[in-house]
Image (cartoon, rainbow, N blue to C red; front, side, top):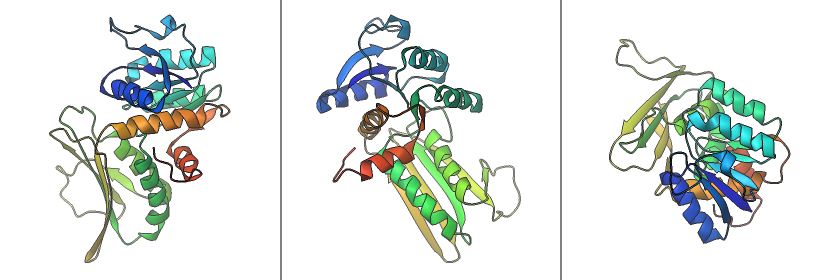
Length: 249
């Protein structure tokens, strides 16, 4: 598998490191503004079977054009897309296979599966989503928190509430509280709290290093490389992993 890494910040470097450990060939690295690597996708002349993208939303048009023009699958792990940009990704997936997720860890894929099963059983519980990340993260709530919120919304009629400072009223049963914590060097922590009368249930995922995201991105690349055109997500990653005994992403 010849992988092109698009975006060579902290995550791009870790993807390269983990790929080397796994024996996966990194055939090209594109890092706009870099003197060390290729400055743009149109400079790529190496063999590429799949692109792993940890860049930024501003580079999306070039990324989609590259994938479509060369018929190359894309793993898009960049966060912060607008609804319009997500629509463009979906449109491009009619031509090529695209895996898009705000989180590529197997643990989050598993957490989403658990939510699909648990949320319909918790009609008497209030639900809150709490996420914590390092001090340098600029978007809030995190893309993963939004991903979890969409999973909850798919199974129960709720309305996300992003701040309660200006609200002077009791919590409604249909509310889905969304909370962000920023500080230190927290890699990523996501908790879904189900609060009932005199009892609570918590589902929590903690990333202990950024390698979990690199492992997941490479697993996603292997998952979609021979798939037909379409939009793939964490559910496909979870399904693929459960088919392999003792699979570790």
